[in-house]
Length: 127
Image (cartoon, rainbow, N blue to C red; front, side, top):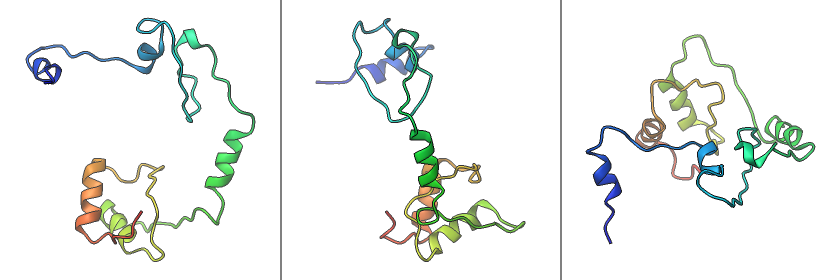
């Protein structure tokens, strides 16, 4: 009951990797069953064209731009990443999630952002 793969791979110059194309293609498995909620045409050729449900993209866009669900605010010219995170921490009403669609939070990993938020007073009720 031991895992040797990670230990062995530390001593090899090359690493094994695979993409979704590799994992979903016929190369590894003769039969595949799967589902993803993310519409994408990056399917293995063997699976054919992605079949989208009519109207789904519009429903998602409508929901994510509805004032009852989402709000926005303009940042001043003097904003920086930590000031933005501090504003998130102090926000009232509080945020329920952080989706950085504009890639404003740069120079920090997801872990570093989470650590900053928690260590600088993110309320416990943050979902």
